[in-house]
Length: 209
Image (cartoon, rainbow, N blue to C red; front, side, top):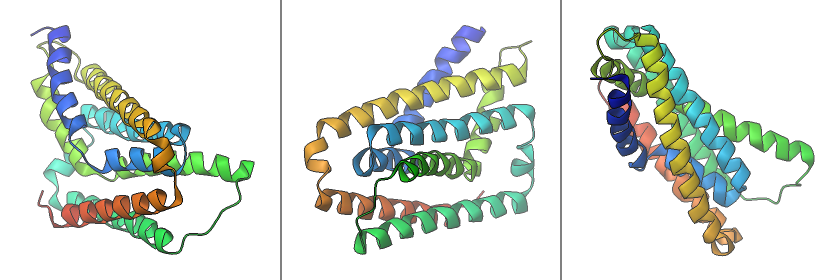
C-alpha cells in the first residue's frame, strides 16, 4: 500500500463518517439558519480544528491514554456529554423565551467566536474521535511511513471532507433561506437542534468505552 492509495482509501471512510447525521451536521445547519452562512462556515472551521487536533494527538500517541485508561475515557466522555446537554438545553430554553437582540458589531464578532468555539469544544470533548484515529492510523500507514505525518495527512483528508459537506449543508440552507429565516422556523430549528444535542449527550453519557 502506497501513501496515495492509503489516503484515497481513508477518504472513503472519512466520507462515510462525515455523511452520517450527527452533532456536527446539526450545529452547521443551525448556524446557517439562525445566524448566517459565515457563522455556519466558522462553526465548520471549529469542528475541523477539533478533528485535526484529535488526529495529531492520536498520531503522536498521546490519546493512547484514553484507550488504555477507562477512567480517563469516562471523565472526558462525561464532560462531553454534560457540554452537549448544556448546549442543547440552552438552545431549547432560548427558543421558549426568545428575545430580540441588538445586532452590534461586538455582538456579530462575538457570535463568530461562539460559533467557532462551539464546534471546536464539541469535537475536543468527544474521545471517540481520538479512539477512532488510534484505530485507523495503523491501518492506513504504509510500511516505513512516518506515523505522525500520516496522522496529519489523514486528518487533513477528514477535514477536507468535513468542509466539503459543510459547504453542501450551507448551500441547501441558503436555498431554503426565505422559509428557514422566519422567526417561527428559527425557533423550531433551535428546538430541534437542542433536542438532538441533548439526545446525543445522553447517548454519549450512557455509551461504554
